[in-house]
Image: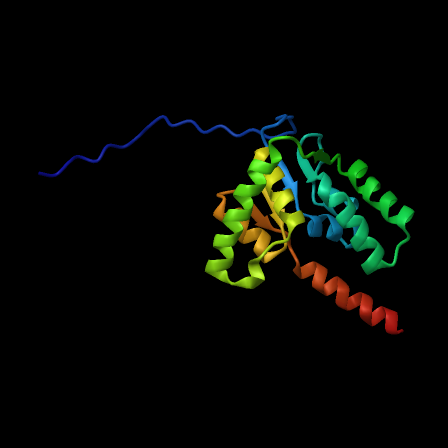
Length: 189
């Protein structure tokens, strides 16, 4: 017996544009390496603004554990002084309206979940996917605070988020690689 195909008529489609605040609906967690890349690379506030991005409050988040990690990277890789590195991190937080996540009494439970999941990830993908204690704390904070998305650059971090069913996006590295090559060429001349 054949069923009749029904056609839909009078379908209305609506489109909306503009800027509006959805406080707490979209929460994007930033991994330490992503923050470092934004601070040191072509990916500056002006770059994002030129692409039409805005930075409303309650959109971007970093874990408090990332603060010292980023400062350490700026000191060791960019040869900044301690105060200069702290200033760069604080400037990033101000420019991008980044909120921070703090460890609390419940954090240890989430950290244990992340630790166990990462052990599974290492068994499945190998030792290069093992994450350190700071990454465990950061991912646990993102999980506990219900980030809707996490920007990542590290493979182990990414695979752990994936296994936890956390939406994650790989921060673009192509521009970063090209930028690093250009900097090396210009330093020689």
